[in-house]
Image (cartoon, rainbow, N blue to C red; front, side):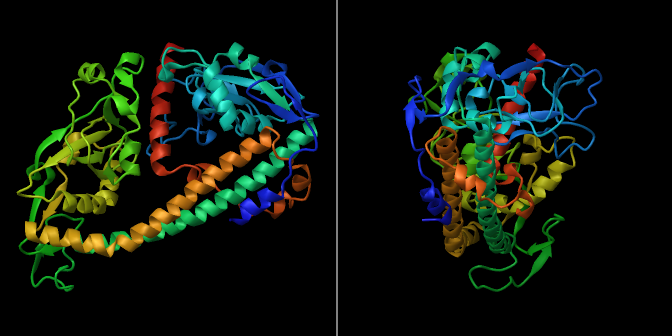
Length: 493
């Protein structure tokens, strides 16, 4: 049991509870009130005259953040031609992405700026501590309730309108208690993020050690059969690799493949195109290949009608999957038959030239170079032709098999340590979610604990929430999906 869980055990329920009068809320602390949100929220619709303010976005993972692309130094990340008419946001305002509120894409802004006209912006009244409602509305209980309050035929088109948000029943502790809850949750959140950051640093170190081993083997710096360098080397002709064993070939990926598969996305507004994962054709997203080195399942599925609508190929098991966007250069092996979205390219290798397992290790090593290659373009993405033209070092098939066996054995312990650290991170994230839910709905009384916390000045430097509360695949995929919906809404607005 972690010291965080020990501290939680020291928290007690409130002395007395009452029936909230709301079935899905159940019992609440006796002195708390239950009111509709319209009692403390007022929609704001002030617009930017010149679009010069800081552009903001809201995410289910990170709340309200400054919306900038790391790949574009010349301006904010948006497809809109002009930011004139975007909505003003002030610190303490609640910003809601009405199309993604059901998955938690709302939050209180710490920033002054502007947001998409597709968003709704609300100001809290004096009876509310904004950050208490930030935690409350993003909690698992309220996410579920907001989903049922949203309107739409299919999940991907659900919208939370202002009147529906106003009707939502919320918990109202006394104002000083709201502030105490925020103080406690902020403190615990910082501690949890610190634990996660430490685990992430360990994972990064282990990954670097693993990549050194892989790089030596797949670039021929050592002959894995002898543990020594090869007897003769030549210039590879590829700046990334320098010299390689004299008898190794250097080819383009397209020379090693029998077929490349592209992907696509059926219309998200057509419910007949999508179905439950167990009853249709697996449809893979970036997150599926970054979560699984060997893809055995998919989060989403499409119907045959959905597949036909975009003319999507069903990729056979054994196909290499390669990410062209988001988690750029991520690679995995498909172990089921599946379709893919447009961010993924499928590669069917010629077995007489390249072993699939060897190619997996090789392309993993290539990833840092691919990221640098992509960063030279306007947007840090690859296209299919760039993927087809990637340089490939090709040992003999016998050597490829030997390299795969060597690396499977040499990286097994490291992979186990990485998996263990990731499980610990998942548990910490789950603990954070549960703790917030228990505190904001009054299952745990944190008033005394909050009063005994150290002053803010005694706290070490804060950690960026997006760095620790999501993994790379979740954050990248979510940002891409949210931005696409956001831009669609901007057109409709």
